[in-house]
Length: 158
Image (cartoon, rainbow, N blue to C red; front, side, top):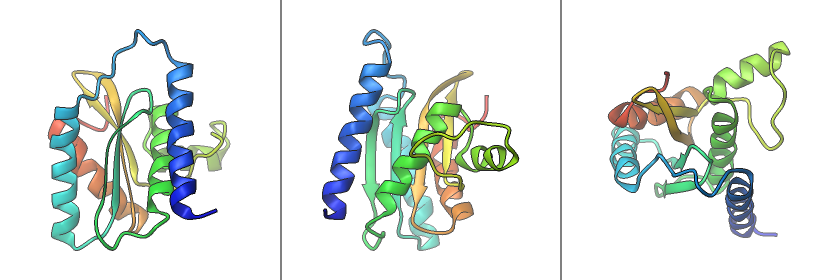
């Protein structure tokens, strides 16, 4: 199965799971306009550094709101960005924090999640509105890109 087909199937399954798991009455808190502002800042940061990455922004229910893959980003970066967003939305932690807690035995494993940095929660007015995750360079650099986007519209902690 090709990586593109696998990525499309994974996106559809994540979206379906998120819609089934949460009430249809719950409104997405990550608006298109907020996601656009965050994405533009994250992409500008990555381009300034010369990093070819994939950036994914989701709402609080892990529904994709926006995705950009800069030319030259690896084919698997989408899958890693998706797994990072899943961890963030399930725990409210950065994906790196989740990894440290999992390694210490202080948190349960999330099926399909990853344990390295690059995914961050986005808080606005004290409420978690979604996640930004990046993949394509070193984990700490991925997190820099995600944080650059999050800080334009809110913060990465409550």
